Length: 406
Ligand SMILES: Cc1ncc(COP(=O)(O)O)c(C=O)c1O
Image (cartoon, protein in one colour):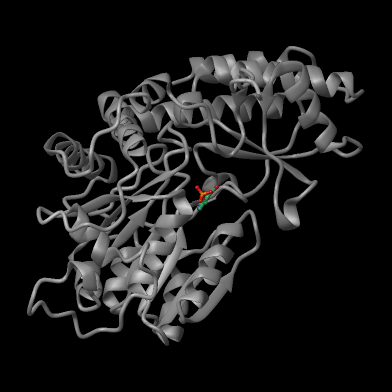
């Protein structure tokens, strides 16, 4: 027999997952309920209401997709895209490419436009692309953890409305850590995951959609044969090509009619509910401030060590930082030593940044002063061990000074 699991006490300072808040883990250990138990349905209703607060929306359809963040991206795109639809995807990192791939699998005619990794799009550039391609849907990331950049979105919703396009936003990496007022910014569909700023495990993906999106989805509504009432009619739009990710069905499941679809992932719903409760108890403005302060202190510490930050500073995410691996240093050897000697995980990079940039997360439960200071002290020690010359002690001093500066 193998041993009981006994995970090492890691400090997860990569781009996600991060350590879950212990309150979330406690909520997950609660006993299961049947999915139609009135108490469980009440938990679902409460969870939807809590996420309306997190997304800053009044959207009726605010729910969870059972799966990692990618499952909600797939649910949104599979349900919004009809075969042959024109979809515009602005790419500023790996997760833009992911949306292109999913949209293509949904039968879209994709117009992809890419900017150099480490930069984002200006509003004029996006307007130009929208006018050129006249898409039915624009699908974009808010923060792309692969480049640590955040795309400004305050103007994009209005722009999409003016050109009769829907806007889908992947806020997996920013929800709870950066300002994202869904209604004020006129974002039609937004989704996320728990394992970043929401301080939970991966495996549940909050999603919200407004009436504009509902209208497009409702005409594709199609009730499973075994659940259909006599005489019940389907919508006249093309059937959504995925059953598991059919938002029309999932909306029915979350509605008062509670029409059966999947078996809700009970423990993940407990987790998602607790993540939102923790965040709203702290207050969104305070949580955004905490993330910004941790990021500022981390950056100050890295720069005091003589390291160079990656990407446009103005568009940096508040919760993940890219840092250039210094010349002559083996990035993987440093990550290994951090893990083996200090039990700290930081991230490597993908694609064009692989081997050039480390990514350090300061998010959710780990957007804390002690986590930032410990990571800086450990990184300084490891770099020093590997014969990289740096001013000893400067990183922690600079981070502490940044924390003292309002
Ligand atoms: C912006 C963004 N989108 C999507 C994902 C995919 O999330 P998941 O691995 O939970 O499916 C990630 C994960 O890092 C991400 O950062």
